[in-house]
Image (cartoon, rainbow over all chains, first blue to last red; front, side, top):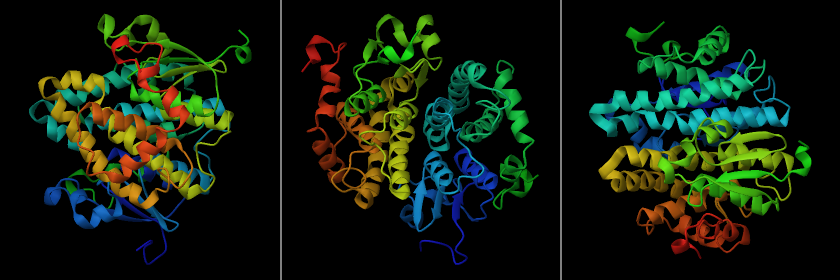
Amino acid sequence: MASSPSGKPVLYSYFRSSCSWRVRIALALKGITYDQVPVNLLKDGGQQLAAEFQVVNPMQQVPALKIDGITLSQSLAIIEYLEETRPNPRLLPQDQKKRAQVRMISDHIVSGIQPLQNLAVLQRVGEKKLEWAQHYITNGFQALEQILKNTAGRYCVGDEVSMADLCLVPQVYNAERYKVDLAPYPTITRINKTLLELEAFQVSHPTKQPDTPAELRA
Amino acid sequence: MIAALVKPVLYSYFRSSCSWRVRIALALKGITYDQVPVNLLKDGGQQLAAEFQVVNPMQQVPALKIDGITLSQSLAIIEYLEETRPNPRLLPQDQKKRAQVRMISDHIVSGIQPLQNLAVLQRVGEKKLEWAQHYITNGFQALEQILKNTAGRYCVGDEVSMADLCLVPQVYNAERYKVDLAPYPTITRINKTLLELEAFQVSHPTKQPDTPAELRA
């Protein structure tokens, strides 16, 4: 069960999961072909909670990636593994300080924003979920806008696409989904727009996945 | 400013588990540094002050001034320390084991701690204890299963890694929020083994410059 019959990597993904999207972008950028197994986070009480998926990922979350005989979860751990094993094109700068900035920005989004507005938390928050999601995204984007003013060139850190950019675009998508006003964040907005012009960010988009519902499909 | 001659400066709070991870890393790597305490409760939360926002716009600890730059986010800091001060190592040489270390670290740092950090619990209000227990329990149930596959003496095999730096502070939080640890024998065993190491002791919340007298070890 360590790989699909084709031998290709297998990505467990949900079309609208921003964590899954980060990995889809990385696979697209690095030209890695893979099979996708959709895990619907809403149907059947949440397919990520099913016993057979718990064998894949005890954390009961997407994404999970079966590759090279192992199964990994946590989007940044997956991306760092892809970077080390399939280094071209690079997703982390060569310069150590820039590399640290890429990780800092990625971690800010992946630890500091997204977990506070993911599906499971919003379900627990209940009625006030929109206000809750907006609060944490706004807080996070206020800080991120300041940080990017120092680090950004064409992209989040300098002029090369990095892991930070893979985290940014899905988070902006979430911000739009939760009706966060993006006018206070011109740097975030500019970089997001520039990234969405790249093919890897398009083919991996939530509106173009095997499990995208018909009414949301692009 | 000749950065190389200036000791690193760590902005830290004694009880912040994120700060503790970095304190352990600095201790393990034998890096001497200065500590600037940031009290998350006093003065409405010193992390919100304008002068700290210049240090870290994210208004959180830890932040580390080192080599002429300022970094935040504990794992980004630890990875930078690993790359620039590689001995002793905190990430295995084997790529797959390294991925497992990052996976376990991320699970704690993204999947558990943010859901029970101070700011969130303040927002949750009355039901904060139940909320914290829920997320720690959820996270530890998954972690116990993962560690059964990856652990040797420590989280991944037999060498201390970044995952261990994340585990110990999270167990401390679990105890603080009265989570029953009986269902997690692997977590408990590894935590106990790690706490025997000097780096995990000198960095402990009870031994920091800003530890209140009544909590000091």
